[in-house]
Length: 79
Image (spheres, rainbow, N blue to C red):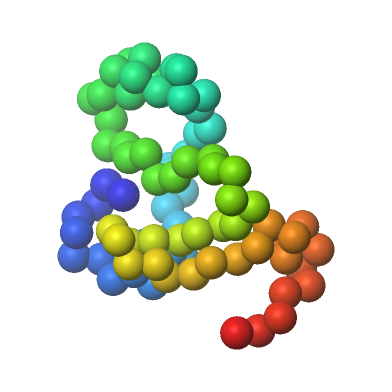
């Protein structure tokens, strides 16, 4: 995320900024979107996959893996 590499993972996951936006863009439109807004601080922070799993990573380190079924029902076993 824009804002420097000195933020700990917990701050990256839970910090909020009033001017932050989350935008979903089709893969086929990613280059055009990034080009149009290139003068703004931004980052691609994820992608949709067919794994049925929300995976949060910091670089190659996996911070959390949550099955989509848990997200839909908020009924997840603690691990």
